[in-house]
Amino acid sequence: MTALRNTSVALISDAAPFAIRAERASDVVAREALLDACFGANRHMRTCQRLRDGRAPAEGLAFSVVRQGKLVGTVRLWHVSAGGVPALVLGPLAVDSSCRELGIGAALMNHALAAAKARGHGAVILLGDAPYYARFGFAALKTGELSLPGPFERDRLLGLELRQGALDGAWGMVAPSGAEAPQARPRPAGKTRRLAARAA
Ligand SMILES: CC(C)(COP(=O)(O)OP(=O)(O)OC[C@H]1O[C@@H](n2cnc3c(N)ncnc32)[C@H](O)[C@@H]1OP(=O)(O)O)[C@@H](O)C(=O)NCCC(=O)NCCS
Image (cartoon, rainbow, N blue to C red; front, side):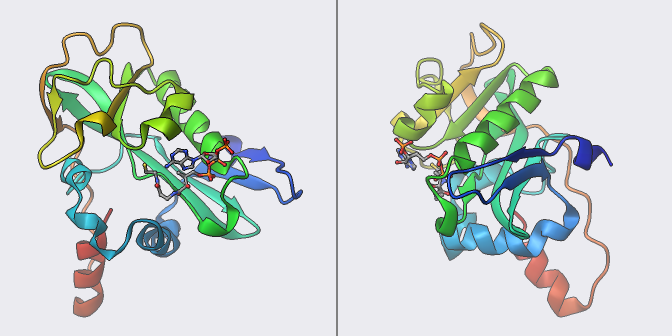
């Protein structure tokens, strides 16, 4: 019920609406397929994944986009300590290639950032393309003293303060600080191994 109340619906140029709603457990297969298509099979090797391994997303901050009955977008935010400063890390963000440049990515970002702010979070960081994320206010201004647990391109480490000054003094390693992900329910052996390896 909560998910339905929090669903936003938007009309886009070709009149096919999309809805942003809380991510559901039943989204897992479609979401994994979308992420594989957007980031490739080796996406679990990425540095940002080290901030998500074994953790649950921040409460109420995982969203899916559904259009014509199909999951076409996803974003999650995660608790981290940014060199001692509490923050969220955003990612992965993905929109199905069949419906890009329709404003779905922007709607999803705005929805997720508004939800994070409403929940009292002070700052969001991410590793991504500055030319895309600048439109939401992300910049490298306050992330220059932060490091990630793996290789990364310095100019792609971006931050956004939802509360002024929230990233002041952010210095050092970004480390996961969220709750552990709940254990998957027992399944037949082969299926359990596959899902565990692909948890994003
Ligand atoms: C990035 C992504 C989520 C954008 O989704 P979308 O629904 O197409 O986004 P929107 O329709 O809201 O915005 C499209 C605009 O963003 C721009 N854009 C998209 N990706 C961009 C990028 N990497 N760098 C700069 N601009 C980008 C488009 O050119 C377009 O510009 P315009 O508004 O001037 O026409 C989508 O392209 C995607 O899933 N890409 C693959 C995964 C990915 O790269 N995720 C982000 C990690 S950095």
